[in-house]
Amino acid sequence: MADYETQIVVIAGGPSGLSAAVQAAEDGAEVIVIEKNAAIGGAANMGMGPLAIGSKYQQRQMIDITVEKALKMFMEYTHYNVDGRLVKRYFEQSAETIEWLEDMGVEFEGAFKYFTKSEATWHIVKTDQGIGPRAASFMNKALYARAQELGVTFMLETAGKKILKDDEGKVCGVVAVDKSGKEITIACKAAIICTGGAGANPEFIKEQTGYTFGVDMFNFAIPGNTGDGIRMAWEAGGDKVPVRIEQAANFEGIDELPQSVPNVLMQPNLLVNKNGKRVMDEEQMQNTTYLSNACTHAKGRVLYSIVDTSIVKYYMRNGVDEISMVRFNPDVSDFAEGVRIAEETGNKGLFKADSLEELAEKCGIDVDNLLETVDEYNDYCDGYDEEFFKRKKYLRPLTKAPYYAAAVRPGGYGTVGGIHINENCEVLDTELDPIPGLYAAGADACNIYDDSYMFLLPGNSMGFAVNTGRIAGMEAVEYIDGDED
Ligand SMILES: Cc1cc2nc3c(=O)[nH]c(=O)nc-3n(C[C@H](O)[C@H](O)[C@H](O)COP(=O)(O)OP(=O)(O)OC[C@H]3O[C@@H](n4cnc5c(N)ncnc54)[C@H](O)[C@@H]3O)c2cc1C
Image 1 (cartoon, protein in one colour):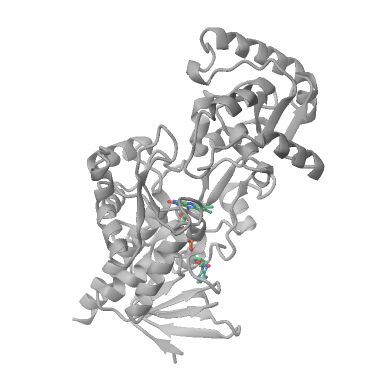
Image 2 (cartoon, rainbow, N blue to C red; image 1 turned 135 degrees about the horizontal axis):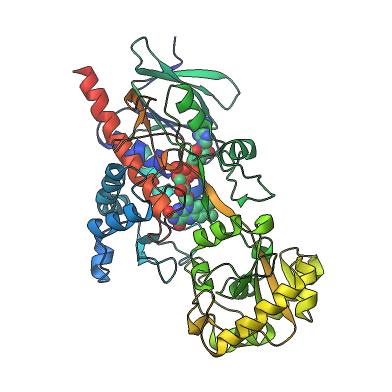
């Protein structure tokens, strides 16, 4: 005998779950959302906004990005190693989703790039505090309010544990643990899994990706995101697809210092590995996924961004080369103060030295190789980067002590993937047939990037969450309506 009964159970209240709940309720279904935490919004409370392709903002801003262009770019980037039908449906719906969100009171600043080479697909949510991290929490609040207005029931501090299936293999319920610790059963016709991946589960990350959290992987670990939904889908007979880290490089430690320090060290500076050798055209450091990938191939999985005093002074006089929307304040005026704080607090991410030899020793970089690399690099600054073809505008010689370095390591926003879905967000079994009544959305089911997050179209993971949430919601309603006929 079930404790509760409804038509659709949405497991989790991040952006994918909230979007699924609102869409399903708008389409006429009775919905219960169970959310493990005491608050809704998940990882997206820290983010700034979703992707859209062909939105009215892009049209107004004369940004030439169409579904055709984005899809071709995306499929080539992933070597057609992902589900093109799912990507297409997500992109096709994304512009209308912006208006759907606006109808419930979400406002947008416009469409933005994350870094120079990316497309302006990132629709940053407007807040009363200007552009900045956590803007998307305003979107989550609006989705939550809309869901409540539509009569969706929320059970907070209630964690989904198991999907129940009947004799015919159709979903018939969800087992959860409520806030008093009691196991409850909710009878339903369809369930939508939206638990946001496993970023806060080091054992699961180790098992699935090989990385050791805090040793060679420094990803965000949003409390509650422990891979429950992935495990539930697999236990219900779902096909297993790779779980990956949504990589974004981590400048270990220096993010805690005044913003001047990360603003200087995150520029396309000289970047070397422990052997004192360069590894890439540093202009590409702006794509934080590429930078994180480069770190994973380096000895000790660490790289060092290095500047000298004349480069710091250049940034102070002329401003930094690259400004990101995340670091929307490009000020570097209190760099010296930041260094002082780093020294006083024993910060482990920033290194300062009076010579390159001392810097190499402090960082554990091969001294002779570093000296040789800097020598060659300084020559390239007078002519042409023969090694990695970095553009002249980013080439600046390192000549004047003190020198500064920051350690860069692999990091990420969390995990993506694990549950195999089709373009209707139906969870597929090992024969790749849909499990009747089981749907998944968001990070748990985000297998569309192949091995590397697609930062050239920013807003991609929140965009995927909101849009697949909606698709799962609409498809689940169609399924239960069809089942009841
Ligand atoms: C710092 C930061 C900034 C980011 N900025 C952006 C950005 O600007 N644009 C972008 O596209 N992406 C961004 N991302 C990524 C984006 O936030 C995620 O892709 C998105 O939130 C995924 O949505 P989701 O609904 O799948 O999961 P989440 O938002 O993580 O939500 C998952 C929810 O599931 C709940 N849960 C977990 N287990 C259970 C369970 N067993 N039962 C019930 N509930 C459960 C959790 O408590 C949580 O509320 C950012 C991420 C971080 C960490």
